[in-house]
Amino acid sequence: MDPMLPSWAIQMNMLGAKRIPFLFVLDFEILDPLVIPLSEISDECIRYNISSGIQRNGTSGGDKLKMTISPVAFEKYKDDFDKVLKAILAGDTYLLNLCYATRLADVPSLEFIFENAIAPFRLLFQNRFVVFSPERFVYIEDQYIRTFPMKGTIDASIPNAANLLMADLKEQEEHATVVDLLRNDLSIVSTTVNVERYRYLSEVHTSGKKLLQCSSEISGLLPDDYLDKLGDIFYALLPAGSVTGAPKKKTVDLIKTIEPEPRGHYTGVFGVFDGKMLDSAVMIRMIEKRSDGYYYRSGGGITYRSDAWQEYQEMIDKVYIPW
Image (cartoon, rainbow, N blue to C red; front, side, top):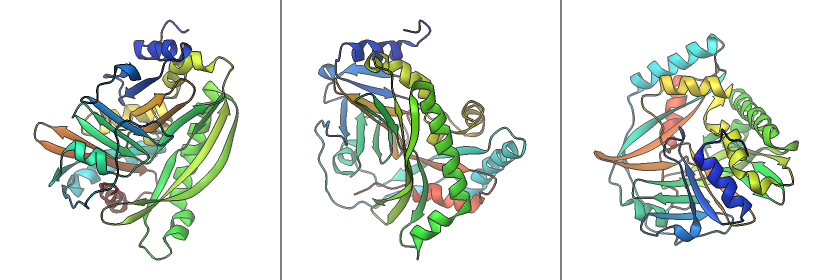
């Protein structure tokens, strides 16, 4: 065990080595990490639902909801967008995910959203935020690790939407960059890294429209003692490459400089180890409860081909609850 590992990673290693089921919730900056045995979780504080079948008090269905949204002004977005383009032209990054918080009104309780949002990964955390994420981070079972970067979104109602998304050169390059980044990340902790599926489409239904999203699947073979090193694995892989950019370290530094506020739990990861397998998600599609109301976090990847207005609209399109 690496003596320099942070306490949360050491705890993941210890619980994994003893095959003790646990939940982990790791914020983007990892300033407020939580690793807790499932037996110690209180329903009043934390509820979760994982698509692989591990569930805790989650239901689905419910009335449609129309939220009132107040996104950041385009002028502000354009100022920060230009900072990203300047960094790209300087060679400091070639893909950066630019994210913002959108003010919401006409929002029900976080508990109601958790119970009714339809998503493969859901988390209600201490009445502070709710996550309904479509994006798996890593899945670990039988010595294999798999990751599923999601890059590329389009309104499915647009004529010929699927072909437009798959043919878009900017989307192709952005997706290829993220796949290459995640492939390199997996090579840090595993061998025999392969891209199993490349740029496959899935549908996401929102309260107002249907979206198409593009993903890939990458796999790697872990060492025999991988269950003793779950903390090492996550320490090496975080933050998630699909929501940062490339090169990762420099781009994360730029994100902290350009974005108007820390991300907190947004674009962090959460997951569950059941004693044998581990499943996890990137905490995108999140609503936070703050002292002055509710906020929805969203964003998208910026490259040298990006158009500011189109990226701004994509950020707004991602403000939805999947009912």
